[in-house]
Every structure is written in C-alpha cells, then in structure tokens.
Image (cartoon, rainbow, N blue to C red; front, top):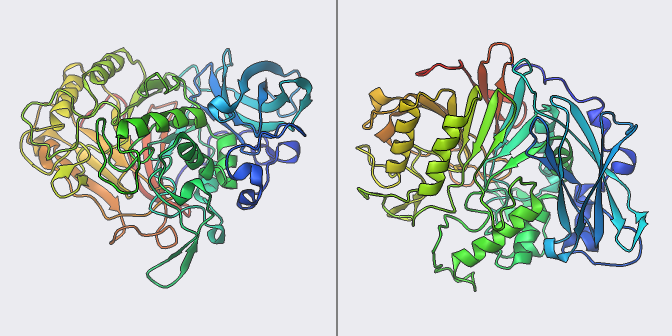
Length: 525
C-alpha cells in the first residue's frame, strides 16, 4: 500500500474559495478576454483568471507566476498562515504586452521546511489603489536537514495527438488526482504543450464514441508565430484542475520536441506544407520565449539556458537536462565519433561538474528523452539516444557512454533517470553484465506519461547498455485516447530516516502499477 500523503498543507482544499476562486475552466472559452490575447480594456480592475503558479522551490526561495488581462503591477504577499496575518509584501514586475501580460516574482529569504501561503494582487499601474481580486496559492519549502521526507511526482505529454480538454470526462481530471497526493513538487518532463498538434472540436473513436474538445483559435493550426505559441500555453490553463494543481504544487519544467515541433533539432529546415516558416531555429526561438513567459523558471530561457540543478534540500538534487537545444541532427546514429551528441559538449561538461559537486543523497537526472528505448524518426533516422544496434556505442550513445563511465569512476552514487516522451510507462534496469559497453555502474530508468495525450505501444530496447525491462504498461495500438486508456504519472518519495527512495508508477484512477525501493549509496540494485 502506498503511504499516506506527507504532512498535508493546512486547509489546502479550501485554499481557492472566496476571493481567490476563478471561473470554471470549461466556461472560460466563452469569455472573450480569456479566449486569446488580452483585450487591454482600461475600464474595470485587472483580473488574474488564469490562476497562479509556483516553481523551482528550494529551502529558501521560490518563484510565483501570474497573468493579467491588461497592463498591471504584480504584487505578492506571503504569510505562514492562510489568514495572512502580518503578511510580507513584495512588488513584482509590471505586466505588459512584451511578456503577454505574464510575470514571475522571486521569493527569497523563506524559512526552510515550512508552508508558505501567498496571494497575488494585480494593481492598475496608473492608479495603484485600483486592484483586482487576489488569487491565492501555497507551497512548502524544501527541508534544511535529512529528517523530513521528500516526495514529488513526474510525467509529461499534455494535449497531444488531438486529445485536448474534454468536458464530457471532466477535462484534465488527472491533475486533481495528483493534487490530492500533496507532493512537494511536480517535474514536468517535457511536451508541456503540443505546438504542432491541432485540437479539433470532435474526434470519432474506433468504437464510434465521440471525443469532444474545448477549442481555441490558436489550437486550430500549428504554432508558428509568438502569439500561436503563447496560445498553446494558455490552452492548458483553461482547465480548472490544472489551475488548481498549479496553485498548490510547484513545478520544475523542462522542454522536449512538441514545445516547438515533433522531433525537431537545431538547424532543421522543414519540408512540411503546414508551415510557412521553414526554419526550425526561428520557431524554436519563439517557442522558448513563450515557455519562459508561461512557466516559472529560475533561469529565464530567453537568452539563457534550460539545463540547471534544482536543489531540494540535502536529500535530493534534480538535474534538469536539455536534450533539444544542443543535439546534432537526427540520423541513423552510426557515427564512430560524435562530439555533439544529444547534450552537446558544454552541457555534458556542466553535468559532470555539477554531479561531482552534489552532496545530495539522491541525484535525479531528469531527461526529456529515454536512454535505451528506441525512438525512430522516419524510416532511417532516430530521435533519442538509442538506434537499435546492440553492439558497442555509436552516434549519440558515445556521449552517454562517456557520462556513465565518468559517474562510475568518480564513484558518484544515488543517480537515477526519470523521463516521459514515449507515451507509456515502464521501468528499466541497466547493468554492465548484460551490455556491450561495460564500463559503468548499474542504474535505473523510469518512464511515465502521457498525462493528457494519446497512448502508444511499448518501445523496443537497445542492448548496448544492457537494459532489462522489469515492468511495462502500454496500449496495443497507436494513439489510444484518454477515454480508452488511463493516463500515467510517477511518484518518487525519499524517507528522511533511512534515505530509502521509492518509485511508484501510477495509472489514473488511483492504481499503483509498479513499486521499486532503492537504497542510498548502493549500486547494482
């Protein structure tokens, strides 16, 4: 049996009542100002109907996000109590059209291991006394010592393959299930939007049933303009479960391909009649800007970098990798020399340095693509690391071999890999005695998702690093809708007493499909 949620926040279920409430998600498209870009009306008071988000919470800091319906000043108040007695006030940025009326405020100097209540108020920049109704949220800072448990969830793949917000099944109901588990944070492992995925009003399922979607203008076409990409992020915020989840669970977000386009890589020139803009680098720059505007991020992606370490107390470091921005072109993957690989030499060097500096008991390598699962791109090319050749490392596998060798020789313990991307859930154990490449210590890779997208068959394994699939749950055909197959997410908990780490692969509906307990400082588990 899974453990009870760790220390639920006081009055979390009532957090968004009263002044902090927002309209029901499935009514939002009928409100003109919320269906697309802000109306920028000068009458009335600023509104924050898209909810609030927090992100990248550490033992002393966190980020808070909001979007206004017009120009406004962001004001954040924090308190140790829901009553907001003696709140601390922070003035945030001025929200305007340059950021699509979004903004993020850094909260620093927070107490470790404590519940932080916050509320965001939007003020008219011309008359600060004219303010909108505050919108409230809550999060818990990371502990300062090893005695307190840590628990988080991970998944990815949202609004993919044409399966959007369906009012007949309650929208993105899996978010409510995840919220009730009261995790410390959520790791979104990429494909947070499907910029290349059109959402049609109706889809006929193989059994004749009709899937109905909430639709918007921006989701009626592939994203090319900056406004298109922004509209894709707004689409997911139309769901009330997603907004409520965002207000109570901090997010650590990374990107993969569908934030831009399926299977993209730098320098790619498209041969796709749907796109007037053929240069993927132009599309990626617009997508990256929208990503930074709509997700709380410690290092603003525009002009910055996506890879980073999020330190969640002494028990856990999360290494958020970027397997998109630095990769070489997708190919058959048989190169005998491949310096660029999937991470690029600079990110690989950064990762090695950060792993050696980490003092956390557990080091989660958050990858937006799997390692030993074969993910094709067309008939001859491959999208991830593996390419199906079971022999010695070739192509992008060379870079992974270098990293795994480094981890072994530096005696870095407590590493495990988490990912999504392939739209099924599985657990793989990698061991040198089964591998063609043997200079590495055994490790685990866990896959989850999709969170709100189509399900796909299990991917084949590449034997180069000796993976053994211990568990898998996947549909028997491609693009199975969420009405036909449950959605998947994973749970990781670290015990503050023993240091044990437990991974649970979950299916929507409260089912724990698979559980694995790992011991700290031990290899070959």
